[in-house]
Amino acid sequence: MAHFLDIHKTDKAALRGIIDQARGMKDARGDASKGALDAALPLDGKMVAMIFEKPSTRTRVSFDVGVRQMGGQSMILSGADMQLGHGETIADTAKVLSRYVDLIMIRTFDENTLLELAEASDVPVINGLTDRTHPCQIMADVMTYEEHKGPIKGKKVVWTGDGNNVCASFLHAAGQFGFDFTYTGPETLDPEAEFIELARKQGVNVTIDRNAQRAVEGADLIVADTWVSMHDPQSKRERRHNQLRPYRVDDALMAQAPNALFMHCLPAHREEEVTSSVMDGPQSVIFDEAENRLHVQKAIMRWALDV
Ligand code: CP
Ligand code: NVA
Image (cartoon, rainbow, N blue to C red; front, side):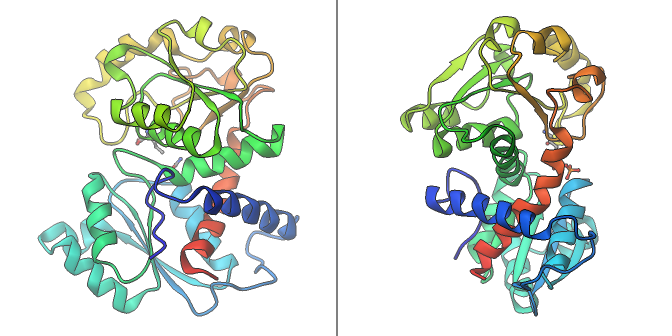
């Protein structure tokens, strides 16, 4: 079963194929209106269910639009409104949904929910973010980098701030696409040791540098994300802000790496992890990233369904 659970769990050639197909589909659409169908309708007759146990703007809209552009049909389900939120097991939910739909995308908290769903499902499952990883986002980010600057292989990517779920998928991508990865942030918020070790085993040059100014020197890409994720208790907010203030991305930091692009998966908290001047500045490609969620996820769905 071609589940898309994580970047490190997906074959390298498949990952490259997904990005190539996404670019091809994006080019083929050109400036067609958003609701126009693609020339080929690979999802014709297919039904896609999307389960959200957390809020979402980009994932929700981009998956939904993508399904429709490819001629399929989609339904958006809120975890809280399903029996899943009221005691039905994940495995039973997976078996039932498999009788109705061809593909399931889920955004959830605990990674085990995703894994149990995939294990019991008879149809492919796509990870739309867990507390631990966010692979669709980083596929869009790799696509975006390469559109602007060419191959990401051998480049230096610097993650600033919380070594969170999005950071984890960047580390996985470093192993699969072959780029260097630097983390800059406080020790208590380091990326998961297991993922650092895995990346190093795959030959990634992983650097940890507590000094943000030094860490970004020579960077090709600087990335920030919210300091407090959806799964983090709000009680952590104040301490996080105090810890992470030195890692805010501002014009001075970007000036240390004049050739670097700036990315943020969004939603951003302007003037917290990044200034508006950087978000709206010449190095930023944040809205291209958001757009490319659409294109890359269309290719992920095609790969999962083999259509
Ligand atoms: N970047 C991202 O996944 O955004 P949403 O939370 O809006 O889906
Ligand atoms: N790290 C963030 C990403 C949101 C798309 C979160 O999990 O809330």
